[in-house]
Amino acid sequence: MSGQTKRIEVTLETLMESVDLAEDITLRVADAAGFDEEQRYRIGMSVREGVINAYQYGNLQSRDRKIFLTFELNEDKLLIRVLDQGAGFLLADVPDPLAEENLLKTSGRGIFLMRAFMDEFSVARGTNGGAEVVMAKRCPPARRDAPSASQEG
Amino acid sequence: MSGQTKRIEVTLETLMESVDLAEDITLRVADAAGFDEEQRYRIGMSVREGVINAYQYGNLQSRDRKIFLTFELNEDKLLIRVLDQGAGFLLADVPDPLAEENLLKTSGRGIFLMRAFMDEFSVARGTNGGAEVVMAKRCPPARRDAPSASQEG
Amino acid sequence: MSFKATAREIGSATVMDLSGRITLGEGSAKLREMVRDLLNSGHKHIVLNLGDITYIDSSGIGELVSGFTTVKGQGGELKLLNLTKKVHDLLQITKLFTVFDVHSDEQKALSS
Amino acid sequence: MSFKATAREIGSATVMDLSGRITLGEGSAKLREMVRDLLNSGHKHIVLNLGDITYIDSSGIGELVSGFTTVKGQGGELKLLNLTKKVHDLLQITKLFTVFDVHSDEQKALSS
Ligand SMILES: Nc1ncnc2c1ncn2[C@@H]1O[C@H](COP(=O)(O)OP(=O)(O)O)[C@@H](O)[C@H]1O
Ligand SMILES: Nc1ncnc2c1ncn2[C@@H]1O[C@H](COP(=O)(O)OP(=O)(O)O)[C@@H](O)[C@H]1O
Image (tube, rainbow over all chains, first blue to last red; front, side):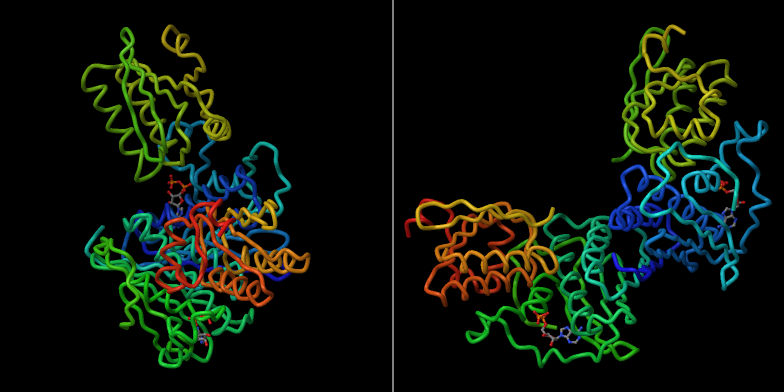
């Protein structure tokens, strides 16, 4: 691995099968970056959840919108962006799935899992207006303890 | 599979490791497209050879140039483009590796293999001036016989 | 590995041996149908053996919650058996571990 | 699976059991060094056992040709043993099958 940042960009269509494809490409990239199986699983799941949201909520399953997945790897971390062409959203509007009244909800755990599984997580507004989920995993993996569910970001 | 064309775009850096990554992503895409192991191998090898050339000859191993890999899948075929940011080249200038005087050369078989392993093969000039290798495999695979080394395209 | 389910009737209970992935577009929808079919045919005591489930995403978690509350709402019970470490961790961090009726011994799951 | 090589001396010949991939950036460079080292240490009768080689790209083919001509140029011989179907097909379409000295029986490769 050189000191420079390595960058891979993938443009996917708004299709259900893009979810699995994005996850598999992520696992491949995370493997090459030296993450162990447990970390690869968490990174892959986070991208999966991000792409599902881009597919469902951002791009509203519309085929003429794209999902942009970007990997940036440097010595410190693997940074991943999932950008869609939707209206964007605010993290503050997302209910806490751990709240007593939400525990038995059948959805609402995607963002929570990304936060728990990644070291950095935030949502920005993409240059095109869509939601851009930005998440990072420290590299080489430093955190081997149980996933924390802290709500920073 | 719907009747529409599915499109995946991958932008890779001019790095040796992009070669394996491109091949692995191709194998994944070809698998989802329903190609059997033998066809996946041929498609993967062809992309490998195309990306090696983009890395070596097109982008001259320069990190500030990119390699653009595009997949287009429809009911008829999987179309793959490998575009670099080099000076381009003419197929007519490429020596025939099967010619007696070239048989013991230690290089010059990449394009030959792409032609042998894919159903369509051509080289265009990309919009940015670089070489764009365009190749396609019929889908579902119709040709199960031994690879032919015909020089069409 | 795709989602698979096979049923075993043990006394008044149905043990569903599940394998593969419970994810959006794969196992989630099948799991929902499965639970619905069981309820429609009068099977209200359901044990989901997750020992061979390799992966669950947020959609899969949602489907387990949905199955749990639906079965309960019809006066039955849905229990989870043999969680792998990955699934255990998922239920732990989502605080669902104590919501579900989780077992690691089939006999005890059936008799509890 | 990455490239690996182990040597066996049999009489005046060296059998190299190769496994993995012979590709640009992986096995190709190692194969070149290996052949060079063998020649430098006076081993001119080389049998490359390709039975466990899973994959060869154009760079790997070039490296086999290079090894073949280099060894021959120094009065030795380089033989290929146990081609898989994939490698066999590659040498066939590139018209190298009849250029190389190819064997499917180690005894015969050693005694020929
Ligand atoms: N890319 C996105 N674009 C717009 N809204 C989004 C996006 N991602 C998430 N959201 C909003 O955040 C909510 C929570 O998402 P999430 O935690 O993944 O749970 P779920 O997808 O199960 O609803 C969604 O219901 C949606 O309202
Ligand atoms: N992307 C490219 N840009 C410029 N020249 C190229 C490109 N791809 C191939 N070539 C030219 O075509 C020749 C033959 O390529 P190839 O058949 O792949 O064999 P090899 O890579 O072993 O030389 C190269 O030596 C190079 O001159």
